[in-house]
Image 1 (cartoon, rainbow, N blue to C red):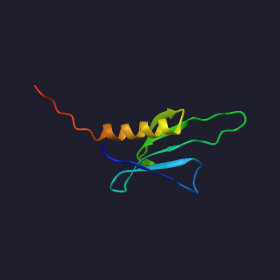
Image 2: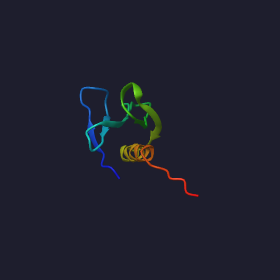
Image 3: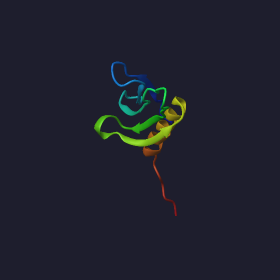
Length: 84
């Protein structure tokens, strides 16, 4: 299993974290819009970054969102062998 390092991006949208692999390449991201008095927002998860980012879904907590991105990246890099 590869190691993923998360870094917060400052000076951009609030609560934006980007995932980097061992080679230092950006492989995914999560963000959460700021909550207001009337609306509570979920974390949004993506594989890839920028224009190539693919939306994965929503998560309730930051840790859950990070885990979803981690496993989505792991599964996209998995090798499947058909035996038989």
